[in-house]
Length: 271
Image (cartoon, rainbow, N blue to C red; front, side, top):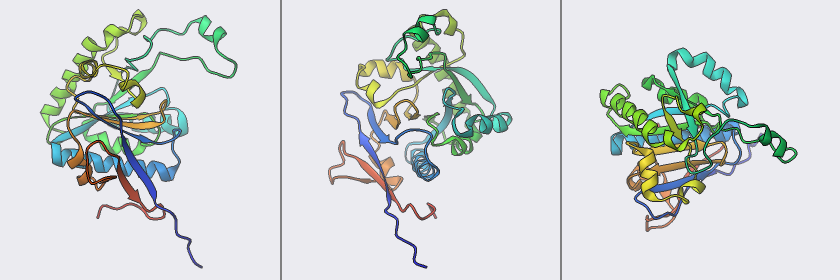
């Protein structure tokens, strides 16, 4: 019996044009949660980028979870089964470029268009504070549109410098992001996680983005709402992309798409 050849899946990081000191790329994913095959490939890409960020830039990831879409595709069960090992801490997440979060009002229900759910601003975030569990946790949760990876300077997940960087980010988030929330209902969370998209970052001044990000060097967001993966970096990522086995669309690597090709009928391997 002859097995038909399957066209390779093309994973392309597209540059997001903006006038700032940040470098931004987006991967269009379609609706989350992803089908198993695409989840596996997106996860493979993220793991390759993470390894390259560590070896090339000396950055280590930490995992933060947008809990609102967590219930899709068994995510809640996965989280519950691993919560003890992951040592989660709870905070709040929102898009700081949008409307100020507020409690749901009766008018939200009455004024919503038929068939359109009202926007719910009460959106908890989860930090996987057992940093040695960051990538094992990401592998289980990848492709659901709930993961935010924040990369900080460190040598290993056990590096005390990483712990201090995370603590500094948490404190900074309260100073920089909590004032954007007018409602007192959401004023007492330990941390505030920005949920950014390729659309939102082009609408804000560069200095505003820098203020929100604090000490984060690289920000990677699988966005359920925007149906994309967004990468933000303070530094040029060309060397990182090459180390992660991506290739540029043009010889001139300035502000061009970068692509990773994987055969869809083979299990990816970095051997």
